[in-house]
Amino acid sequence: MQMPLEIRFHNIASSPTLEAAVCEQFRKIERFAPDLISCRVTIDSPHQRHEHGGLFAVTIDLRFAGGEVVASRRPSARHAHEDAQVAVNDAFAAARRQLEDRLSVRRDRRAV
Figure 1 (cartoon, rainbow, N blue to C red):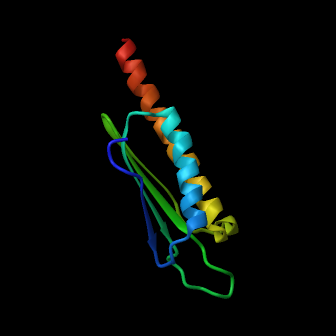
Figure 2 (cartoon, rainbow, N blue to C red):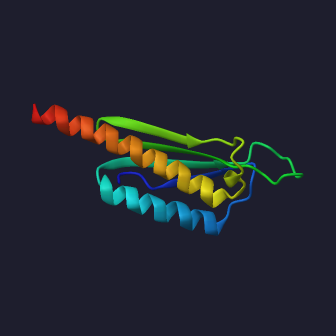
């Protein structure tokens, strides 16, 4: 990757545990798509409700030669996102699916 992995925390304190989870998920994507140019991950806690616990939003912006993938997981009725690590895993799963689709289309175009 040409630029280092960037992890941002918004409305929450930075966490070494979350940073490690992001790095682990990113390594999986990097093995799949080694031509990545940059990756920016933002972990946000937009709601400050204390009665049900905080919900987390995660946005991943992957740039690669010839394109960009932006995947996000926003708080919803899905209470699994009360756990920041679950939100990170879900967002990376979505990013990987989008990246696979984009790279598959690129390979198909080259084959023609």
